[in-house]
Length: 330
Image: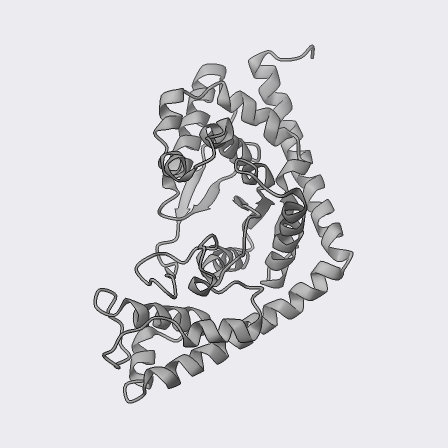
């Protein structure tokens, strides 16, 4: 059995880029009978920046419902909320005590966020990598799916696991990265040289899974293209059209080459119209299932079950760690 763990922060809108880059990968991984998948909603990580408490609670539930609506199977995937398993905080502190300020300050995401923050830098922004390591090491994860821009974090986790094992004896499994280089990279609809981001201040730049259907279709139809008129993939010279082709291909599993052939005598208007209809069908299916889960007691039962399993696994690990470090009376 291969144990896989992944987490996502409940902040902002979940976009089709998040679906195609992260959720779709889980949907593929859950097909393998040998995989056991833990999915946690990283609400503790979310509060490294200011959050409205009402909005945060809403986003936590919505994110859980969205993952289920996208097709997560609860017999293969166990979903829970990070803050409901206190062992994350407990091991996070121990990992902090085995981390060095210099290596934390060198983390790329910290440096990027430090430049963007205008109202002060919280200590949590600096020290969240040890908590992230705890999220993974608590569960003896074999594999962690990461994007190409997240490999530094997993390397930090591996370093901390080895450091602890060398200091206190074999305790943690050292996880491997699963970098899916075949993941479709989706870019902004208004600036197609930049990645699509749920935190983009311009809502026309992304399509959220919970967007109003008509609004989402309008975003596709108004997406930036170029004046050439031909529908072909050329990321350097035609980034807008290339981005739309990527979205079309990823949602339909039709190759870009076949799409180029299909639309070789067509125009942007027809191409965008067809893609808008595909997006409509995709979002409608997800939103119908989302509306069921968000109103159903089933959502809480699933989260309770995931929490109980996570606590069972994590509490055994934290007891072992405390004993190794010399904490407590037992």
